[in-house]
Length: 512
Ligand code: BLA
Image 1 (spheres, rainbow, N blue to C red):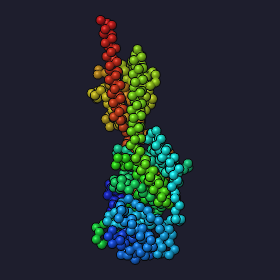
Image 2 (cartoon, protein in one colour):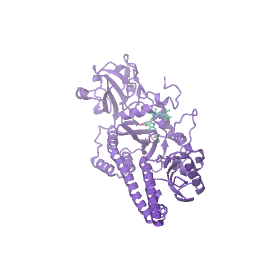
Image 3 (cartoon, rainbow, N blue to C red):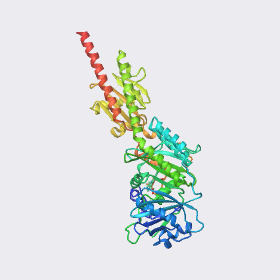
Image 4 (cartoon, helix red, strand yellow):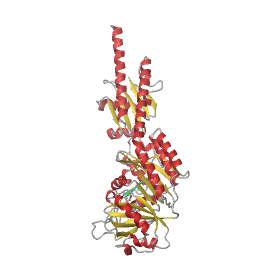
């Protein structure tokens, strides 16, 4: 089977993670036939948990486990049950010596799913409304997407007590970045780290759009098989997309073990039907989180998702506004200086302040003026000459200059990204904004994790190796330029050409 075949980065996408035929053993699973309400699958750990072998449950009803009162409650639930889970608390009255159970119910794949999680006490309410109100208030009040993310991860850490909680945000290319983090002080920070798209394969992403929360209380678990794995009339094991106890990919478990993580919980962040990111929780020792607390985190994740679009728009408007305001002030400075070029760099704001960049340069009539972090003057001169000889357009932008001109390798540290506007058709006069190479802006903070050996030269099964894999894909690349930034640069070009035309006309009139 695929699970026994060697795993490579290419077959990773094909692992059928929705039909593992087994569960995590911290609870047990019963699947009932929708019509007859008879048990058709039971996880083999019923023997360990209930003292009843799975095969002895097949073909029976729930009467040998539950009291008539609980059965009556279930009868009420069946008709309206969907993929969305519902909770019922019960003692298995018919089996002596059993603890209290949370029964998590849903309907899917023509089966009724009952997942039993044992709990120590019957469960006082964990819903602390006042602090939930504070949490939501903070999230609502966040003035930027990053602050919003920070509140969400802090809340989830407060609620669950996980050692580390991060917001993992996906980029266009499906790679991801840790953009917010709440953690135990002594842990190495993950904030700012990136990982390649392959760390979370496509079928997993598709599943996480349907099922918003995953929980692995102990990554060292031994899966409990279903009995039977295949129903006599079914072509494949039952579809566990919505099952809480679903046994997860062994590849992913190995990844987590290599990371030194013993328990995880992840919550999907979905904006407009797209997986925008995940709240990812880690614990260094096994950790059981109750169903109710998981639901509370899910509530926070869904609230976050619902508010996200407006926060993203807010960030966008704020940046748009910053560009407009600095542009207006810059143009004022330009008009106040006799030499208009001086207006671009002598005072604040300078051209470098209009657009997010590492630095900027003005190349004008053989002179070079630099602001912020830039290549050397000689390198900028070479770049201006290259632009003049190779780029006929008035504006030029790239997030990988090296990909356009191999000679760019020498300046990729400060200038992997370039946004340039031409000030003259005849000579190499430009304003150029620079963006640094992305990988130089992020590095692993410490060396506390031991380096793992690459297993077959292509498998990356820990975040540190993943980071290296990501590093290779974005070699000599900067963060991309946004359409509004390119537009702003164009506007500056047009404005300056108007100014020069006016100066030229004035000189003509004076001469006449
Ligand atoms: C799933 N991989 C995941 C998940 C995360 C990551 C968050 C979601 C499952 C979960 O834990 O709830 C990745 N986790 C990370 C990253 C960090 C982290 C990047 O904490 C960074 C700090 N994984 C690989 C490779 C393969 C792979 C090379 O790295 C395939 C060859 C597979 N990852 C893989 C699979 C799943 C997964 C199959 C699905 C697990 C499941 O739900 O069954």
